[in-house]
Image (tube, rainbow, N blue to C red):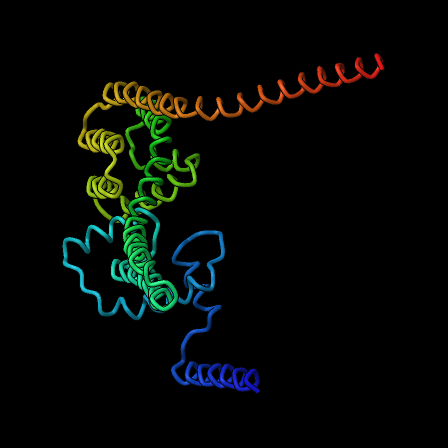
Length: 290
């Protein structure tokens, strides 16, 4: 009887929910997942929990107010990181995810009250982790773009010997650019066609705040203003190559500790092999004596 009452309550609640969703014209879970996939711009499918959190964050974002300076900074950062969300929605998502973790403190207070401060601390950590997600995505994207800059500078150095058309140089390199750099060059070339070349390059420089990219854009602006530019980019190519070598050396320094672990495992396997052979021979010789 108790099970029947429980099932009746669950089915009644589900029915009332679907009726309310139809009357309020709430989007379906599939529609929310499709919207979330468009926002994230990733090949992986979003989870159901992400879609539900997105719906709650959209409602909360209507009540969030951000000052003009912070709004502009966050908007540029989200755009450069490839996140197609507004600063209000990004902040609301962080608040909603932290609130979901914080709500778990209610059953914790009933079952084990001593763990409630830990749950609240985890909620705060989740909030700051979500807020820093755009910064982390931008840093990862900037790192991938900076790996292509030595080849980009070398290409500009060669192209300037035959042409001073900055737009054509960028379009020619865009055909062979990587997956992270090519879309940014698309935005840059489109911006250059629709506005001033110098203003477009300045906006492109401000998107990533990369010192290497700033040096390149300053050189291209100098070429647009009539400077020769060839000697500048030859020196810049040398400097960028040195920075790339330093980056590769830093990556190589991280590899030996990993190699030592596997080398120790290989040594242990060799020792076990020899010990097993010696033990087998000893046992065989003792068996022959008896």
